[in-house]
Image (cartoon, one colour):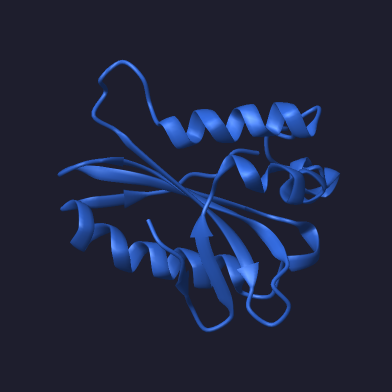
Length: 134
């Protein structure tokens, strides 16, 4: 995976080194009012989570995990993450997390539009799925 740009975003692969920069962002309590609390207790715990995401699924499921950091192009600041679980030749689940200060500005739509455009051609997918958890 390499960095790509949309009109307003730099979308770059998520890696362990991003944990310190993303810890405060992903600790925004407003992000978890209507979604499960996936915040981490410490930078080290978040780094462990990112390491697991980088390694991908274990056990030969055939899934591919892809995760990115979303940064505003105008100031370089991270505003969230974008992720997908791909079952090659079948379908993908997509999702995102945005800090509350980035809500309502179309960043999620922009990031998801890029991802939806990329997935079918790169992975031969028939479906792209998403769900919302209260």
